Amino acid sequence: MMMEETTAQKGMLRLGIASLVIGIWADFLFFGKDIGISYMLFVFSVYALFFWQAKQKSMLVLRRRHLFAWGLSLPILLLSTTFLLFSNTLFHFINCLLIPFLFIVQTILLTESNRKKWYTLDFLGELLGIVFIHTLRHVRTPFSGMKEWLKSRVDQKKYGVGLKVATGIGISLPILLVVLSLLSQADGVFGFFLSEIPRVLLSWTSFETLWRLFLIALVALGLFAYFHALMEEREEHVEIPDPTREEQKIVWDGVIMVTVLTMINIVYIAFTVIQISYLFTGNKMLLPAGMTYAEYAKNGFNELVMVTLINFAILLMTMHFASRAKRLLYRLIQGLLSLLTVGTGFMLFSAYFRLSLYEAYYGYTYSRLLGHAFMIFLAVLLVISLVKIWHDRFSLIQSFAIVGLASYVLLNYVNMDAIIAKNNIARYHDSKILDIDYLTELSYDAVPIILSLAEDERVGSEVVSKLERRIAKLPANDQWQSFNFSTYQAKKWMSQSAGR
Image 1 (cartoon, rainbow, N blue to C red):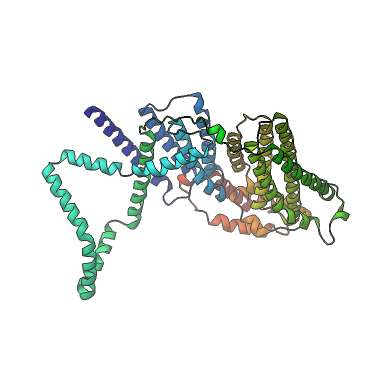
Image 2 (image 1 turned 90 degrees about the vertical axis):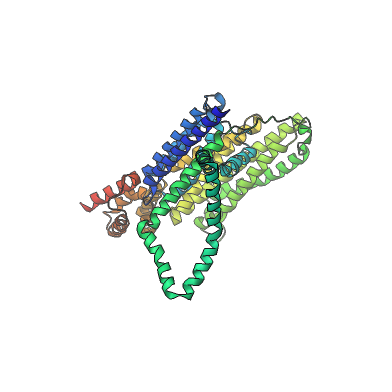
């Protein structure tokens, strides 16, 4: 028993030292520096700590059910690499939140610390429990261990006296603060000497040093507490099956559902016919008086997207709650759901087309390009839903989660800023309209594209001047931890442009 306790204590000590090393490493990588290659290196170091701990606890076993968990390594790696390759601050902010979340999901699945499937809401509850309950519970573990270590190596009588002295100091501190404040106001000379104490102390150690030490301790303590909570042994939990569960399931009447879906589909068929006449035949005579195509496109985009989301809700709820007792009736529901899916797909196409018209008239921005991406994503989900309608055992939530994550990673790598710049420049060549301020405020990913305007007689000098002012704000000698390929390329292109 004593040997097991000693082994456990040594394991905790090793984890504590390793966590402290990574805390110092994080300070070296990030403090006072822009994020660049440093983020990817930090992720690798945390992975190394996890695999080392899992190996020590014999918790890392290759199993088929871990396939999804291992697969999460790819998006985590790709998203970490974006800090090296791109300079889009929006995606960097989201990735700073998403990567730790994906890492936590992956480590929970690999160590089998979960009891529920990863694609259920119950799993999210388990994740929050591990992060905010078990992890926080182990924050005090290093301090408890240090207390026990001191207790075991110091004479019990002396330990008791020391503990009482520490308690006395703790009690006296608030009293002293009040007394010193009153005395400093009563005697100016005493107050002067008292005010000099912080200055003397700060001359020995700066506030920045204290802040960095605090951050190092915070990172080390967080890593220690999380991995200790993740690797701890938990009681086996056996879930007793409920034989009445199937009977308690809510079921929607098939006839009611057929009626509802039929009415909705009739409206959508009529809408589709009208949309074809307005948008895809080029028949401008059918537009209301005084309305341009750009105005028509702008007015309906948000509404169409909202209707699409409502259709998704109808689709998902019907597939989940529709009665399957009468096979023929359920086949009819499947057919109507398929028609609803096709109608929703046409609405997405209509919204996509409207947004394209609007962009051609008003220009290209982040929000509009993200709108295109979101509609393409919804179209893929519609295809998946169509498969689910006819294959009931097909896992919809798993597919949505995987496609959603893959879509987001792809969005990180399509270089949105370069696409926006390219399209706005092409629009400028056609219409001679260009928002130079917006164009030059895009991330450094777009600089090579924007510099194609450098030779333009109308806007070339203004574009180059604005870019030069932006590039001048970058640190002249970046530290290697902040290296970013996008900013490096931007500086290189600007220097080449200046040398022409």
